[in-house]
Image (cartoon, one colour):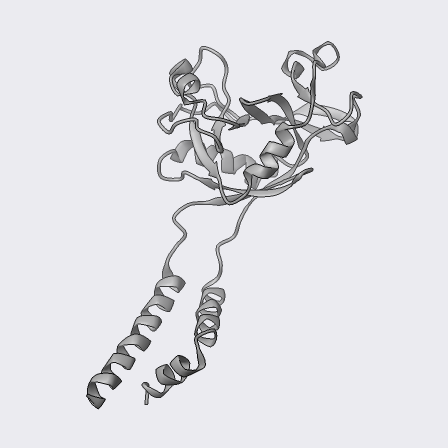
Amino acid sequence: MRMLKQNTLRLGVLSSACLSLLMIFTVRAATLVDFSTSFGSFEVQLYDDQTPATVANFLAYVENNLYDNTIIHRSIPGFIIQGGAYSLSGSQLTPVPTYAPIQNEAGISNVRGTIAMAKVSGDPNSATSQWFFNLSDNSANLDAQDGGFTVFGQVIGDGMSVVDAMAGVPTYDASQYLGGDFTDLPLLNPALTPDNLVMINSIVVVPEPSPYALFSIGLAGMMLMPAGRRKASLTSLT
């Protein structure tokens, strides 16, 4: 019985060690990006495997800081909020420089909390820099329209509380001043000033934890074990 108990303890320690090694060498399955906005920050998990071309295109804009200091220029309650088209420099709005349009990769449903690419009406393969968040289940409308709108990520955690806060800002028709893209411009107050705009301060890739950090997490987990169990695990190594 004594030998059986020691073997059981050794097995437990080996299992913990294997789990720690798995944590260290496991590569994150999907890219995470952090949206920093004038209403707070939230994270989006990208669908690298399902929509590789769309994710690569989006990350090209991210890595070149082209989404820094951009605005939400279109907001329709219960439907979508849209950005990625215009950046703010001082008091001037300028179009975001764009790369070549990409091939449509529709297939994932436009349900609440997903991010999808905007495109030119009638041209499925026209998406460049603009994206939108689905505020509700828009699958019946957007999954088939113009070949379907490509969903390429999902808001995670409590991030939709930030998206909903942005979507709750009142909108105004500013098209006579700024052009046809601004019929549903969200403004904190009814004045076309920079401090009234809904801002995307930056979008950055969330770095993966280093092996050292993961190993430290594993050690911390061992230290949080009940004292008796931790002692048994340690003594079983002798």
